[in-house]
Amino acid sequence: MSDSVANLENLPGSFPVAVVMERRVASSQWVDYVWTATGIAVGRHPETEEPRLVREEGDAAWFMVGGFEVTLYADECESYYFNLMSDTPRAYVLAHPVDDGGCPEAFHITMSFDEAHAFLEGEDEVFAVDVPPELYRWTEAFVIANYFPEKKTKRKLRDWTAQEVQG
Figure (cartoon, one colour):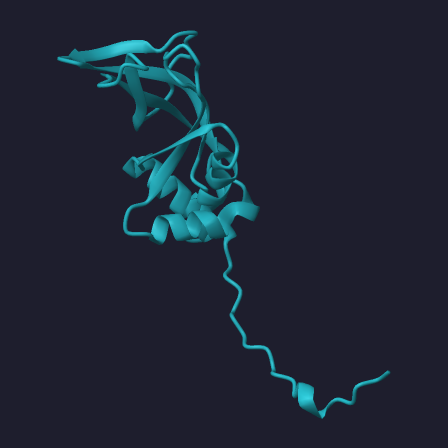
């Protein structure tokens, strides 16, 4: 058995990550801050009740929200494939908005545009962030092991005018 096949069989079931959230002072009279997810940090990061401040500079501050696992599913492989093949592959951070202007409550991270889009149609926020190289390679290995594109075939056109109308 080749090394690449053995590696595909030993893929971990999930990938530990944390979300980096950015807070900027808003230029609006309605809210004090604007929040956005700006990245993903690879590795095990402790889950905290509140986002942990990691950097502050001028009107911006960056916070780490840990304790997440990215999990891939075989029935989402086509979405992962098209995401990885796009010009700018993205990981999607799903979060519940917070009414008091606080940090949105991130609750899930996915590599599937289809899954992210389903949440976008609700009231949740979806942040598209760059994919770290380690997460990209793990997702790529999963797609190689589990995705087999269906060959596209044209259906035969039927001559609808040749059929008799039955009354």
